[in-house]
Image (tube, rainbow, N blue to C red; front, side, top):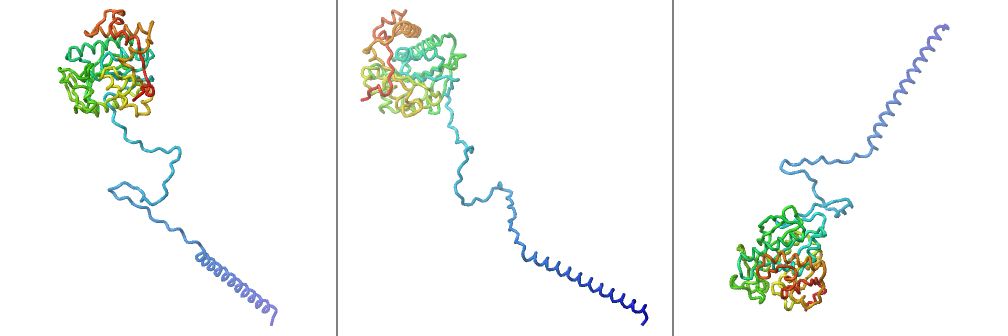
Length: 365
């Protein structure tokens, strides 16, 4: 064999060996790839199952279906929906930044005789004053006398607030169903005077023929089911009277309440029956209220004449001057000047005194 033939055969063998090696290498790569894919398919974790989103029905708003869970604890900043507000009374009157003094009396002039100088001091201090008269103080004389006394009250309050002027009149029906008249001086909303105009019960407590002997005392004791104002209008029951006092108090939010000595107190015997009933009405209606009860002051009425005189000088003079302005309209107790007012039997002694009592000082029997 020639040398050329030998070299040709060797070249062919080298080419076959290289092709075989390449084929083996390709087979190894393919087998590795298949094994890798199989390993991934077998060993990879299952994907989490996800429920499809719920689709709200057209007739309802979307909300998650409730499931049982522990009651959540609200965070410090969490808020809850406010409860519905109570209806506002037609008689509600606010007081811009000042204290409100609510005073409730049996007759027009009881505030001036027994409640002063407390009321005039409150007005001078810038407080709001809301005064309520439960009876008309008619003394069986009819509406002419009632209206004269009411005019005297308005003029007295002009004197106490230091401004003369006209008053606006508003007739109201409260949520209690009771009708009343409210007067407010024009330009001075911190003052208001309210008249319920129920019949005067007389010093004897038996009432007057002109008003059918119907009295506040008989209403309070259950002797009559209702009592009508002397000016006409709807009669009110005992419960309505109590509800009215509470409603007015809620509408005024008073810091202090002034009224008469109630029944059962050691200072009640000898007082006007209407005074004692009004004191009891206010005490029953308002003393249970922790925001109002501690601020109630009960003023000694007729029996104050038996207590030491505790007013004199400029304080007494101012009190008497205000009372005299009122008395010019009251034909029963009219007095011409300060000396004449102080000289009036019994009234002069009452004017020289003013005794407010706390609940603890009532000495209730």
